[in-house]
Length: 267
Image (cartoon, rainbow, N blue to C red; front, side):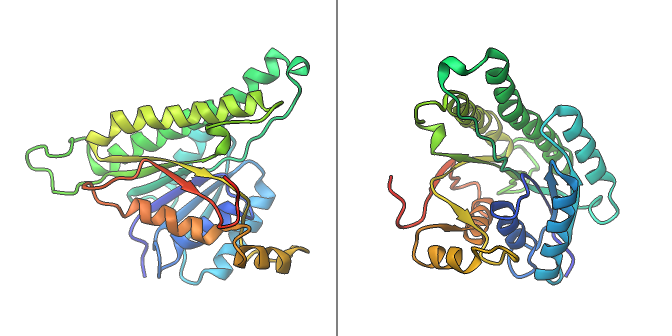
């Protein structure tokens, strides 16, 4: 079955990213071609090969990239010219970058603090801008309700995977909290600006550990599967199903912020 559209996910790792990608790419679920972006080429290509093997009929391609504007622009350009992806409209873009910083405040430097913000918040800005331009290129720039535009003319979904640090953070996590909160506010601003154009912007708060139950080769594999079954960890595939559900929402009801947590996570 040919994929019905394209999803781009940055932050493709062996846990959260893998489970999300598997659901989005599966012909029985999202049936989207998935472009995976991550900083380290070798693990990214290994992950892509593993996902293809575990998801028959899927279209999954790897594009090494970090969160700098130049790197992201190269990746989006490569996606646009890739033979298997070039003619597919962008439907879903996910910023799921893992980024943390812990340091006593008086040991923090201005350079390290601002570098953390540039990497995470600046990366979210650059990724979002490229994704929005692609949404409008692929689906048109008419606002919702414009004469001649079809009803429920959703142009795509942009998801930022956040954490509880976007709402509150602990001692020694000043840079981390500032970054997570910054991306949350970016998502709010974009949602208010882009919703009238038919672009759905979502910020999720992942509160608790996420594990890919189908991940292979981990020594703690059975233990982690048990933790997922008992509600101590989130299933990465369940996160993928939640993201697909968000994308499938029509214009009559859009979720902007969603709390994600396993049953036994304290909150």
